[in-house]
Length: 113
Length: 115
Image (cartoon, each protein chain N blue to C red):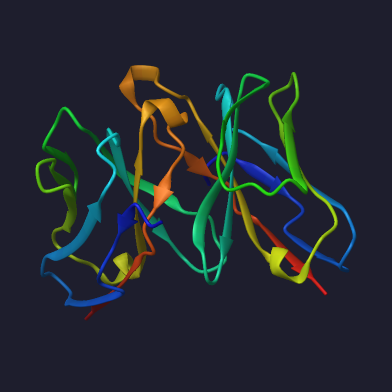
């Protein structure tokens, strides 16, 4: 069963605007969450992570928000740039599983000039 | 460049054959993970090794096995290959908890085509 869900397969945003990518999870044991960026035929590239003891983490243009009660996290990219166009994967993990990653199906982001 | 290397980049083989995929983790990382990406299943965790020992297992078939060697490189062995095993196979490594961080860094992948 899919424990991590990204319900939007695609998103189109204008350059300079905010991109918001969403992710929902079902397993209450998850305590570490990550976002990865991926280009076709390449390995995922780590972007940003957040522990369940926090509700926000920022790194440059990227901010991840975690709402544990709603089992929801989101990635904000501000400002969006054409180079951000890629597939973004949400992933979740927990200690008893060795922090193995459970991935969502991904959201394809297109940033237009 | 993530610092994780995988060989070979591409592999084409026939059904029923056996192949070995190789992964070298980032310098200092003790933990290695293997993932499979297929069109219909997305990215799926297969198995994890930590400092030479199996730590966690995911959706790995009995025909598949892995090991991690004393120099920390890892190999994923796929046997009795079927058409459905065609996929991208990724290796990832992690410092596993250093400074409370558990992110994984992925290699470029091996594309396996079974004909």
